[in-house]
Image 1 (tube, rainbow, N blue to C red):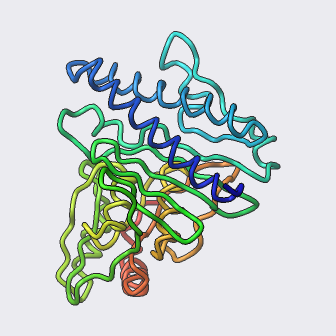
Image 2: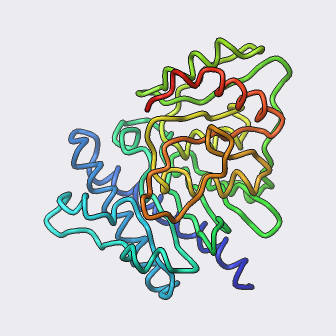
Amino acid sequence: MSAVTDDHALAAELAGTAGRILQGVREEIGFADSRLLKDTGDLRAHEYLMAALAERRPDDAILSEEGRASVAGKGATPPTANTADEVRLQADRVWIVDPLDGTREFSEEGRRDWAVHVALWEKGRLTAGAVALPAQGKTLVTDPAGATVVNVTGVEPLRVSEPAAGRLRIAVSRTRPPAFVQRLAETLDAKVELVPIGSAGAKISAVLLGEVDAYVHAGGQYEWDSAAPVAVALAAGAHASRIDGSEAVYNQKDPRLPDILVCHPVSASTLLTGIRDVSDALPE
């Protein structure tokens, strides 16, 4: 395989394997102690991804949610650290990963809306990415021709579908739905349904799989929450931007990236206009 094709395949492989590790952690620990389950899942998936990338892409930088100094107290042994900021910010290739997106859902028996994110940023843009949905048996992944979804029946092309006329299903947080999204729903000239879904990766995947029509979020996220899903969304023909319409920019010194909009391009103008109209409700 070419180097480019191999990056897509590697993202899918790593996300899928980390997902299987997490499924094993669920089976091993059970659901009685949610904190133990969350911490063990986070750290095992993180350590796998850090070791695999160090072996397979030793010259690339890594930014992982669990590689930050602020999470060093999760276990007796501090997690493997991210590439130092001064090195990462000068690197041409940076892997941006979330070893477990949706820890709350992961720790709740029967919930399927959690994910693993693996994305590659190169010289200013996302070039490869994979979102594994282990409990759903699916991995959404970029490829040179666009995007695909890998499941138990094989590999299928992935292309965002246009919403039905007069209807808009918007994915929102099941625990912290932004108040402004409710106001947005009331202003749109469509029948709007707010659909609670767990992790950011699961929400964006739901847009790409046609289960909802849009994901609108504001009020707190980081690069690892959206990098891989946005990479796949763009490859699948979706609109993906900040909620003011500007580009979502990655590999920054401050990894906070607090808001995102993902939808079919036909809905983007309507949603961005509606968001602007209720902007007084947005958090500072």
